[in-house]
Every structure is written in structure tokens, then in C-alpha cells.
Length: 418
Image (cartoon, rainbow, N blue to C red):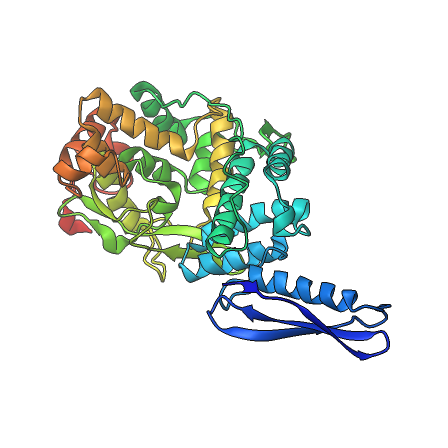
């Protein structure tokens, strides 16, 4: 298939010829293909008509059954078709947005090249340029997207091989992943409630001189509704997007558990949405036992919170979905004031994992708590998953030892009070 036979030339007028042959397409059907001398070409022997025919046949042979991707297609066209395939496979909007970001580097660097013109050397040069200009994380994603694009091109017959396969992985600087000690964790939980240190604005990691009275750290945390959020981070180790997706319907005060079944993300062109996907490896649906200090906080919050239409535990001041990016900026201001620039929302996840590890709990228990879908193949095969771990709540309670008396409301109230 994709082949043709002997080409014949026929003169139809002085300087005007057509060349034709029988061509067997990718659909298995043999048909006659004809091309005439291009307009304006001087063609005494019919050679120009034959060249036009061969160009057409070459393009047809590179076309895959019914598709429009060819060896002469541009890299920009390949990206468009690859993205369409990702959409058809129902990839998460967040993933599509991320891929679109790095696709801008790809199309800017080689978008006009034909697929047959792209070599491993060209791809390597592009990846290095992205790494140099935009960092290793973007370079790694760029390489991943390019690999997926050419994998599709190879599968559809538009490219003979994948030029990305032999490129080197972008270099990565491995930073030491830190977690808070139990003493540091207690200190943070206390400071967000009581610290009198100034908490000025932060721009590009540096505190800025304010034109107004700078609030104390405790005042800022209260105004920005960060105290309860930090408390919940320490009590669960969930991701920031998951924490903002918690609904009151998922909090069971009787069983002392919380259901993690959605996350808040920003979709380009749509805005903030709460999503829940069964196939999302970064939002594994699970039920977590809560330590006493988290239950105390949630009871008080439910009593004092103005109800919001979505029933969110951690809604914005307007009662809508809270923006994870805005929350990150608010926390950056707090951690800078605390002198803990390295403490991100993810640090609380590592801290919870460290606390459980120090107590000699298995990796399986930690995986259930953090929502890791595959701690290991062996554990997946031989150990049960999704168990509510009340021992986690007890360990976190003992580690933090937060006195409930600082909370507003009745610290001794039972679950029926909510």
C-alpha cells in the first residue's frame, strides 16, 4: 500500500503535459492518479508534469488511512492533532493547560518545520533552550509532550521513528525535601494564632515596606482565614486543592472522619471549579480519621461560619470556591514572617508522613492517609486499601497536643451539638 506503478506522460498541447499512474492507497484500493504541468512552467518533455505527480504521490503515501497527518505536515499541525487526541481521551483540563503552556515553546522553536525535517539534534537543541530560558521543570514537560506527539506520528505512519527517544533528560537539581519536626509543627500552629511578629506584604520572596500599619502575624492569619486551614493541613496531610474542596457533607462528627472526594482547580477560560474524577491519581477518593484538635476546630467553624451555597468548609470570603494560587500567596507571606521560607503546603504532607514513619506505621498506612494510589506493586497485590485509619488521628493528636481551649465554642460539646 502507498505504492504506484510505471508513470506515463501525455502531451495535450505544446508545453502542456499530464503524467499519470496507478496508485494503491492505504485503504487497499487502486486508483489512477494524474497531474498536469504546473501553471507557468516551461515543459517541453513532460518532466514538470511528472515531478508534480511524484510530489503528489509522495504526499499521499505519507498520509495515513483517512487521516491528515503526513511527513510533510508541520510540527504545529502535529501538536493540534495530538491535543485533539488528548481531549478525546478525556485528559484533565489542568493537564491540557499545562501541555498547552509548553506547546507554545515547541511551536515557537520548530512549529514551521515539516515532520521529516525534525531530527534528534533539533529536538535536543529545543529542549536545552527551554531548560536554559524556562527551567528544568518546563524542559522535562516539553520533552514529555514532544515524545507523545512523535509517538502518535509514528503510530499513524507520518514519521519513521521517534526523534525524542534518544535525547537526554533535562538536568534536575534535587533539593533536600524537608518536613517540620513535631516541635516546629506545634510552634507553627501556635504562631498563626498568637504571634505578634509583623507580617508585611511579600513581593518575589522579599518583604516589602507597607504604606499602612502592618498587621501582626496572628492578625493577618485571622483576617485571611488561615488558622483553620493550617490546622487542617497538619491534621490530614491532604493536598491544598483537596483541602479547599472539602464539603460539610463530607464531615462526619459522629464517626470523626472527613471525606476527601474533590479538589479545587482553575481551568483556563472557565475559572475555579471543583472536580472529582475517579481516575485522578492526585485526588484519590478516601475517608480520613480526624484527630481531636481538628474535630474541635471544625465544630467551632461550623457554628460560626456563614453558610455558603456549595457547602464548602473552606470557602472564600464571598462564599465561593477559594483560589489555591491566592492561598499559596497568603501562606508565602506568613512563612516569610515566620522565617520558614521553605515551608509550603506540601511540607505539611511530608510532615504527616514523617510523623507516621517515626511511629513505625507501614507505608501502606501512610499511603492511605496521603492518597498515594500505588505505594508499591507488592502492597497493591497483598494488602487491603482504603481503610479508615483511626490510629493516624491518635498519633497526630499526640504529636501536636493542641489544647482545645483556644478554640471558640464549647470544647466539651459532643457531636450532636453541630
